[in-house]
Image (tube, rainbow, N blue to C red; front, side):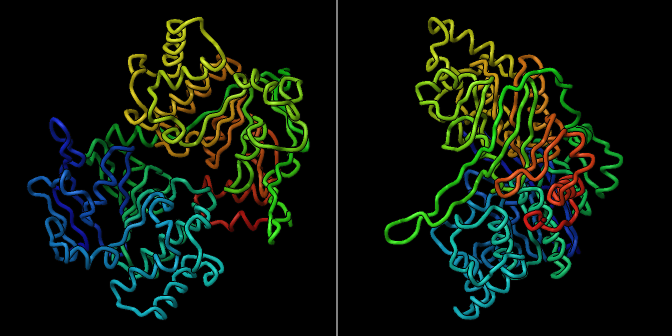
Length: 541
């Protein structure tokens, strides 16, 4: 008998005017010590399937269809009493969610959150629970475990928070660990470390692993079997090697071909330098003592110099905290900095805000998460029109509307959707709205800050193709900030590798990707393209 047997699982949600079927007759088995991956794009039903295992969906409006069955170690979970589920959740089946910052309680210390499940299921006293928490933190590779006990989630990095979530899930040595997109927002080196950690822990405890992901590279390295889902249905299933080598369904072939590919069009070697930085520094003061005197500095950007030609893309890569985003904000004069910044030969550093304002339309930025960067209270038309009004482009509302509609068409959106709001769009569509907001002002330089990190791989490929096409058509210069080196390779002409605020390697993209010289760069490349275990790039010299 398999450890977990799911048969004809269907889940529907009651909505005004009817029902939405999120999962349709899904069946699979999961054996002890094995890894099963559920893959598919956003909205395919992966997470709803996983949440059903622990009966964590809101009932109602969610409901299971007739014949739905989830049998775990001989116990039927569909319709099980709350007492039965309480004994299973966090004890025998544990789950690690996608975004640890929203999954961890910001008001409680790390110790309290991990110890909670030990006290609940194991009836441990405070001393025993504390000792077990320290053991778990060491097990998941979190340094200075004792010192971290009193830390709050916001005091940890993304990778550290994810390790805490894994420690919490493993506290009672569960039979099944459900991992829902746990590496999506992590740097490539941290991603490799987390995946190695999961493999090691799985071998140590003999637990089964259910992976929910849209990253087929992770599936290839981690899973024994795979279920490919779209629109709530399983369209293909089987051993990973067989499905990846000989995909039968058109949707599976679409996913396998969806990774951003190709390279940017060759840039004009004679193009003049558009953006230039010389010895750029952004230091944040550290204040301490009763009088709050400056006792040191956090050197977020420390002596960075480069030039970006017109029509070219400069990729900036590095782990979280390396200074990538700070560099982009400094170039746009959105934060204070020292050192020379030139745009089209004109010095920007030292300019008063009044002198900078006319240049703002030529210097634009796209943020990482379009959902949080687009106002939920404004329609798409209002969002795109805002810049036109600020810079007084268009004689009247009718002319501005015509400009908006042309821009929406250019980024691949239906002009009829202009009156809709951001929550009515998919992630990829929202990112196209963000592109339209920047493009409508006809800029010459755009900072792209992780614009594809939260998107499905197929949508990533579409956005990359759009950005390449717009660059070729309008001669745009991009500063492309990302931890996803596959996307950087598809977009960038040149690459800067940053670590601790400094550039450790720079050069043409073809050379850096083909023959990286610095150990830190090699660690990033190994983590991104091989997904093999690498020594932490944070300690590379």
